[in-house]
Length: 292
Image (cartoon, rainbow, N blue to C red; front, side):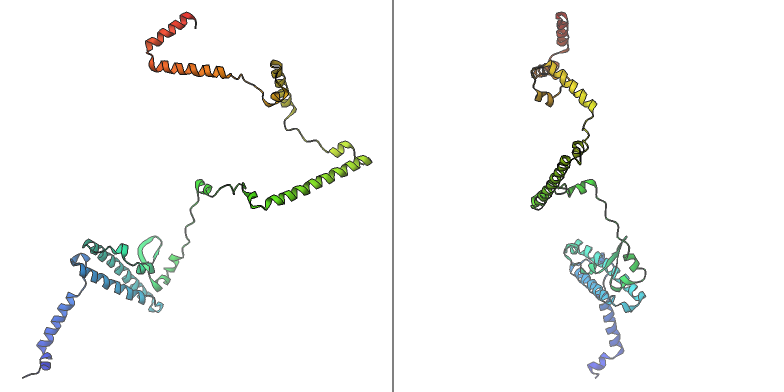
């Protein structure tokens, strides 16, 4: 009688073992489409398997000595696995599982870097330094947006116009010192001119210097004097200070005239609102006959 070890080495036994292994391997193979899996626990298992493969490939792609072609293949495989992971996470959410887009870690996604203008495809590890890829990341950043007038006015306050410059207690003493020095210089200059006038080195007109030009031309001053004279002639009781403060160039109604005009306007509004057209015509005829 053959032993059990000898039975295991027979051709039939090896064939049966190989068939069992193949069927077991087919059973453990990840579905090509996430929609083919209807079990939530299996979907979770396939997602964890994909994450493990991504982690291994990300660790491999950090080695810059693998060569350009190997790095590009690894980078393509990582992006493919990331898309597959997204499909499984969507399917897990459809099966009633957790939403990994909100609670899942983003470490693997943050390791990659997207090229500006190429959303979705990322470069990992040494693939970011490949020829042709490095130049894509070295593009100049866009210029900062220009601020409009409203945004510029947000930072403008009283300090911008110097309204609170004296609150620091520094500028006021400095201004007082400068003012005292300027006054002393002017007084010294005036005394020197007076001494020269007394000694005959300078006339009085030269000491006073050039007279300042009037703020208003003489013609406008003469016209104002004439207006003031007319007003004072009409009302001689007005004082000199009142004449200088106010000049009436147009007729100004009194307070009583203003009240009468407002009352008349209010009456006309009420008549137009409540009186009929026939009544208004009769009133107009009556006023015409009375000569009002």
